[in-house]
Length: 78
Image (cartoon, rainbow, N blue to C red; front, side, top):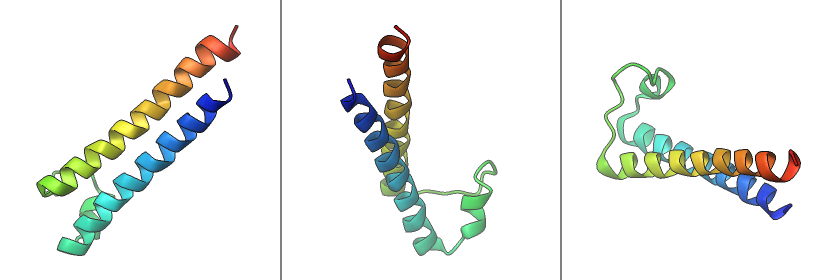
């Protein structure tokens, strides 16, 4: 089941790359780096394309965490 480790790492890294790409598109469009750094403030106005990319990246990272949980629960813990 070592292939699950590769799936986990791939999902986490590709998700992170997609999220960073969506932020890069936003910064290129607006030039507002501070909105990305202070993401908890309501300054980040994403276009639909940036929003979809951001959610796809976050979803991939969640899949990576879920695969890690499954792997450690069922295959390493037993």
